[in-house]
Image (cartoon, rainbow, N blue to C red; front, side, top):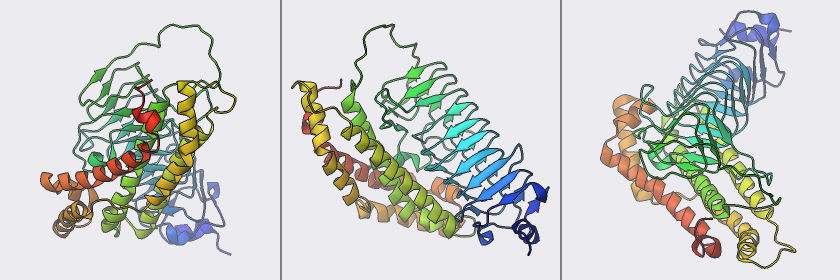
Length: 409
């Protein structure tokens, strides 16, 4: 019986040392292109959903394990572990990567060596340096490989709290403007960090060595933070600080992912073709849905973890009770809005411009989006932002005491 490795070689996959490869019995070889694909020594390919498209190069700098990933054209995974993630055209990831479920890297995103990602979404051109832990983030910004959002080396997104919850996803940029590929980049200087959940506006520059603990929703700001204020005090376990910020930022993040889903359904789907195959599109949708479910689950787990029994009646206790008692209603709202499309007039206006661009330029996603007029981009942004604003508004109305009855903690 001809081995799977031999079958791949017969269809054109270049394999330097066949004896070092491990191809799982469940792997569907029809989902691995033979055109320009290179599997270097030490590759392990597992999972019946694994998809590898033309020109992909896997394992050039070290052994690679791929498990149920969707790997687009000309992607380079140079070394590391990759599971249940999506990589669109021309993505590059350096040696020592550890990439897990819910991760999407869009066109020409680039990551250097020794980087950990999980539930991470990087829009086109976003670049990460080395020695980075950047889980539970969405980052956008930039217009090209020369003008891109960047994260400096030795950066950390702090995504786990003393109360052992992960309702901490940070939104760096946003979906409605980020998808238009015309926003000022965000720069996060090396040896720094963000304490999630955090929101940063386009044009934000965090100086190297800074730890960002607050939202910055004004554009084009330089932030330089020292260490936390010196303190050595009693810390009561279960203390929930900045509850309003946590709930509001998580709702905003989920609403942005829901808007991104509609972008994929109505805009990305128009580009299905030779390079962006139907299988790759399905993997993109599946992974984004996984990300949405993760964020909803993390927010609900945070809400249900609030200590509301046997607590003296105080303003803080009343706020916690409201969040705890109403989180089931929040879950129902997210379920109701799962396929909501927003204002279809603005969507259709933008879609008309997309169709015109495809007719003129073909199904080259970056070229088409870059070529759309500013007026049409505004229609697309209004469509997406309108969805987000509507979802956020309805969600916050579930927690009137928390949101409207108090100032930021």
